[in-house]
Image (cartoon, rainbow, N blue to C red):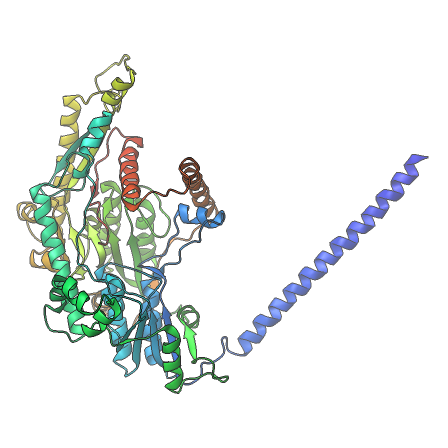
Length: 618
């Protein structure tokens, strides 16, 4: 009979499964016990092994220098499909932490600054890193910088070292500030797309790219003043660090063809002759130099060293005592919630609220690195800071690379605004864009019609010409938002709306220029802001600093990855149609800017007011 056989077979597989399941449980338990034993041993031994004497701290900075680390969907997608890797940026706070700790560590003898993978930052962030290097050097410890080549931002940090070394085939490429942007008026006209711009502010040039074929005189004037100020700051700082005569960099660039020809076309030799670097060495020669300095490992093959990440992991954060709460506002400001590395009106306001309700947090520092965005999102953040001040907790704003437009809006509810001399700030202005594609549809033979109960139905429809009445509504709204902006700024700066309007009009300023015009209180870096917060909160000694940040959920990571896969699919489609051809930088820029224009019409409102400077950390 088949049934007893089936029962016996079932019992056999049941016993087999029990053996497999029991084996699995045993292996997992053994693995757990092994990990637990490793943890106990590590704790008993005091964590990481102690450093040896004359250890070199290797500062191999990777990626961009950021206030808050984030990963884009595209980067995640490229890593997922094996077409790239997730970029690893370096947090500015980590650089400060490592260098300040190493300055006090008797085992750390010197530091090696390796900059080949460094993606740079704006001048304010570079100033912060340079200040940390200066504090390290002030203890008598030396810093050696090495690079295969140095671009302008890499060289700024390298110049802060005691000795700057360059590969014999390398170069120092310092070019100045400025650049070019795309203008799309003619291209949009050709395809039948009309962009209606409503703005307040003579110098509010954020959207000129869509309505003109070149910059306005006001835009040129503002840009020349901004970039001129940045270049002056850069050259003065580098020439001071390298003990070069004033104007040395300007003269080198002016005479570059002649000087390079004299050096036989050898860019490395030119850098050495111009005293931009102290020596030409390969990396193995640098390694031998450090070995000869008496810091060899036991086997004599290399020098005693500890990498940046490993040394950062050794630093222990205190969790007790009164603290200064730091909230980072980095990236464009959007309505609603946003993950770390960007600014959400609701989510960032919630972080500030957490700091306000935390009894251990005695003062709040808002670190701003934002070109602006949504006025509504900006106002949610500003209001929460205002409530924090009303609750009796001092609020200090520390401006990073950019704190413009909406980035300035969120900076207005502060007891003190601290800006770096090179911070891009101001841009007090508002605009709205409304793209229309009715002419493009006409060219395709597509016609649009329908019925409405009022003229407002479909007033924002991109398929229809712009109704003059709707343009009046848009202008009235923008005027009102600008009035709010200037009124809040006047109240914050103890001025009048009329006085603020004279330095507003959408114009951007450097931090130094903004200080002269009363838009910021103090020139300095993050440490200056922390000291101001401690003083106002009456905190003695060196208070604890705690960063208040959102945590990425698994859902957020999944959504980011899904979006990235979609982006990667689009890239693959492009490469399939155009094998071997990748879009140059100018094409990628146009793609991003035109995609941004399209997204403006995707919201629930017929148009959106924007407090955005559309600028980047130069």
